[in-house]
Image (cartoon, rainbow, N blue to C red; front, side, top):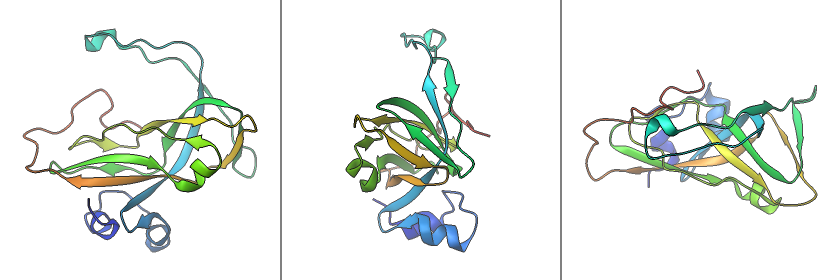
Length: 165
């Protein structure tokens, strides 16, 4: 596992200055913040072939004048605010911050492949019937990176490369 300072020095996560670095860089990773939230407005599909992948339509949720959004119990899509560029010898996992878990909100993880670059999207699940309020820019997950035993021959080149431009 890479130390947060090593991730910072490698400029893997785009943070806009010293204040953001002080807030986002943690001992074992780097926090990513909330940029956008949406509801899923239909069904998705995932088949054996890439052409059989259909992401569900989205219904963007608006933040109020102070940047807050109220979320009822349910499943939401989120986009993180920071641009991430993974070198060919690093892979990652993203975990919810403990404050989210203590509120009854979970962010399941997926593997972040070597060579991926983008402002990633994730899934946010509100499990409490009381809901939750989140503010745009709130740090909601921690990206944890690992050094691969050897660099990947080719980096990630999938459909989500350079997403969130």
